[in-house]
Image (cartoon, rainbow, N blue to C red; front, side, top):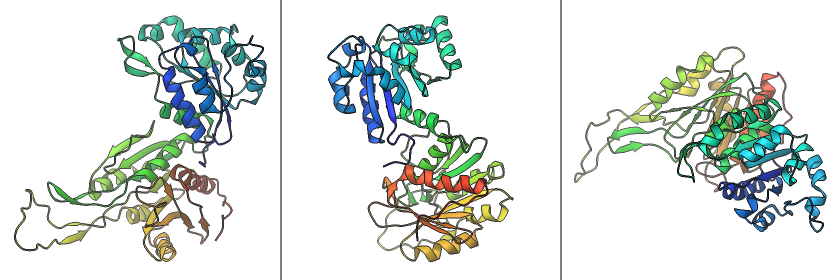
Length: 410
């Protein structure tokens, strides 16, 4: 299970009557996948768009719709739900519900429940653009924000009513990401984190290149986790097929030299550097300007060394700056990892063996061992890369605070 703050958390999802209610079904599924315990409260209008049975099956809990249904155990226990809730999401939140919450009106199951809630609340407005931009709606959202609610801005685009503008409910993955960020302690607030991710490509000619199978998943997980923990994050990324993490400054590059220049231009401003990218150690001595045509015989390719970005950063690292490297090995992992810690002036290196299907390139999970400059070693179980990212950042936070986390085992 993931390291996220959602594991075993009691989350209540409020669903209002809008066409975007269908997205709330996927939202429940994602929350459950992350280990959350989900309960759903629907307005009567919401039930016209999505059947309560759908939410009941996915959440594995009864759905609350009507406070006056004597046969509905959920209705009778709605105050218990408010006391147990550790976070509330309202998605979609209609203009009517937003107005009720801002005014303290309690005339249905959801609005009555909300008056009893004391946990963090995230509201995801979704409605016609004119309704969203109306001064009354904006005033109500401002009041809710002042009351401590997190307001997730709607997306901009074509709406179901055929108008174009703000009002689209964000996708479920974005809502979950923002909820995680909302609930995660900001232990990296005020810190600038520089992350590299993905492969590099060294051109042989305009249609061929030297590269590796790196998917970028681990580096993107590090960047996402650092942003969730309050850091200002810059991600220098080689070519990948991944969506950019929210609120992260992504700098796309292709070659090692492009990555080196992007990193060197930003490294002095960074408090933490996590060098995850799988860069090419060699590049063709000559990159042909035109496609090399196939001949009858063999050809020889002369390779030259590329810039060792990690070593260069280590040589110029200032006091208080934390440098984390990554190492993917096929053998003698501990020997090579410890050598790199010393040779490249690292505070920590995260190493894994390539080969097992649950670890390394393209996998969603990783099997990492952390080696430290002071000689410590921490062995992590096989876990999701998002989980690995938070474990690594736990160690970074401990270094920032001048402490050491206890080893997980040798």
